[in-house]
Length: 414
Image 1 (cartoon, rainbow, N blue to C red):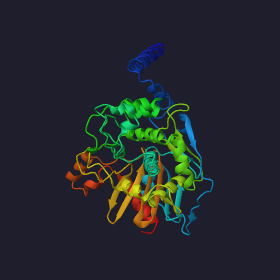
Image 2: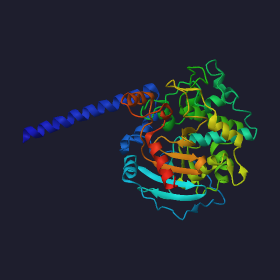
Image 3: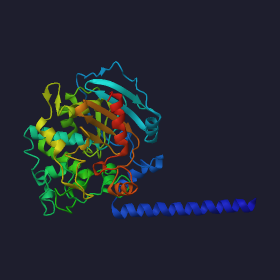
Image 4: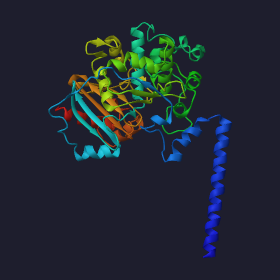
């Protein structure tokens, strides 16, 4: 027994020494590399049992408040409201991806609404990169108001560091297309990536303004959150107010929102994380979908010009970074041609969707904790070799997205 006790004691001692060595090495790396944001990242994830960003991170960071509308737009509850039951396969997908909300609207009618876990009608959650589309629409508003002259203005007019030779040709359009040619690493897993620093760090302006140009702008679509963050700073410089206030004045209060929205900041009284981190309720995201569906018009008022919205849906970089024709992403919004239906949608990191199908007057909202990764060129080639029926236009879209499209259509009777 004493031998066993001595062995356990020795094992704990070795474990303790190893753990201390790891802590020292990690601290030395953080200090020597200047990546102090890692402290917050570790504290807000691994030390509390999480592996990364979460949809309920609102209180983790300082945030600004975007006030709701004075008068709420009320959805018409359809006479067939919630009569649909998910099939076993659909429910299995919901469980697998930890869906928290699924809503379907046809026109102004609410057809279906289901929430999971602690999520409810009034729950606000992070929709991550759906915020990018909001930023894109605000660029359109600023152009409509003459605060920004055009999409082809040089970024250097608003961000002085872009006057350097490697960045001087980058325009607002290039940022909107995700075709800036900057060296931003887009990764949801790598703690040393610019994405991680932008989420957990406290100097967004410094991070995006020091990016280097590594290829000619406008040549290829390469999804980078830094582009959206730059657009946020351009809006603020052009309109003379912070991003949240502009979103409140020009968008959120105009679409009958029922609840306040919230936007995470990089520090107290700091800058909005324009690339992500917009928190609101599922029904209010449905109202945003209604605005997109109607090409920027809300009950007779043109909030974003139709001309800009049409350009937003169609203008795109010529190829993707996989070297194929870009049909998946236009100006800060995802696009998919499904037979006779053109689909426009906003997408978040963990499988959040606001999708509109104008030909069917259909909107669906899906919120979740997880998602199935999008198909890349490597997976496409493997599936093709296996004889599976795949087409190149499906690249960069997730299989789950197509399944939710089909579910929404069934709920609407198509």
